[in-house]
Length: 213
Image (cartoon, rainbow, N blue to C red; front, side):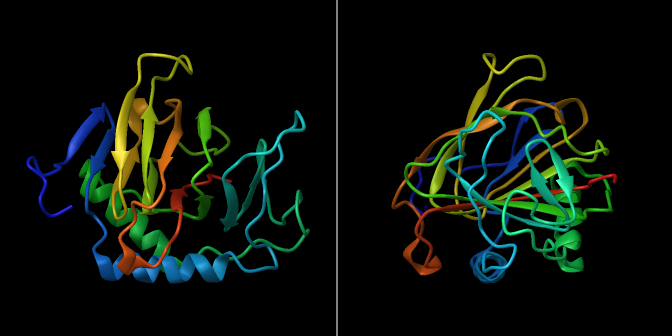
C-alpha cells in the first residue's frame, strides 16, 4: 500500500521471531507464484489434509522434499494419491538461507522441505506448533496474495498471550531460537486484498524448514 500514513517496518514480534514487510518484490512474487502453480499440479499435487480425528483442514496443501501428514513426514503422499513427493529445488533452499540472514542476521543452511498452503476466503488455520521436524532451524514463512491475520503465540499454550500480525503479499516472517516451537495460526483471511497485478485469488503461504531427517 503506497499511501500508508505509517509505512510498515521490520518488527521483532518475539525473541527469534521477526516480520519483514515487502521482502519479496513484485517480480519475485510472480516467479514464486508460477512455481507454486506447477507444484500444485498432480501427481503429488494440492490436496485436502485430513486430521486423525476425521476432520479436514480448510487450507489445502502441497509439499516438497518430504510429504507432511498429521503428524510426520514420508517420501510419498501417503494420505493422498501415493505418488512420490516433488523434489525440493536448490534455489528454494537458497531463498530460505537469504531469508534467515535478512531476518535474524545469522547463516542457516540445509533447508530441504516446503509446505505450501492455499487459503481461499473461508480458510483458516488453528493454533499449532511446527514440531514434526528433527531440526530446530528457523521456520521461514512467505506470503503471496490476499492479506491475512497471522496469530503468533507462545510456546506453552494455544491461548494468550499472542500477537496478531498482518501479513501481506511479499511479506516474510521467520521464527526460530526461543520462538521456534511457538503456537501460531491464521484466524482470518481478507478476500480480495491481493494486488490485481499478481493474478492470484486467495492466499498462498510457503513455509521452508530443515527436516533434520
